[in-house]
Length: 91
Image 1 (cartoon, rainbow, N blue to C red):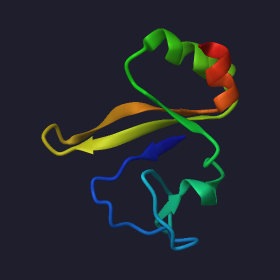
Image 2: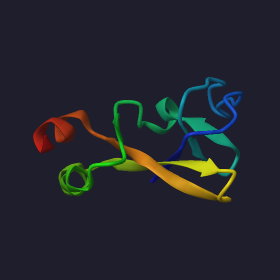
Image 3: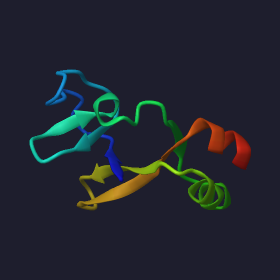
């Protein structure tokens, strides 16, 4: 799963009309994390490769967080959304 950190903060969820820092793209439009059932996950910023590998192995649900870079013209990884219990166990 891929969660997107949008460049434009003025977006609305096509399901509930809400907004937030992160979104998931559905075919009808953007959806907030609450509507897709990922609002209970915690954000882990990129930077610690060993911790990331441990979390991916221990967390049954995780999503990669990306953000579009205008200068490079591509999406760049920002971190992971992981379950809080898996994060506590991995640390």
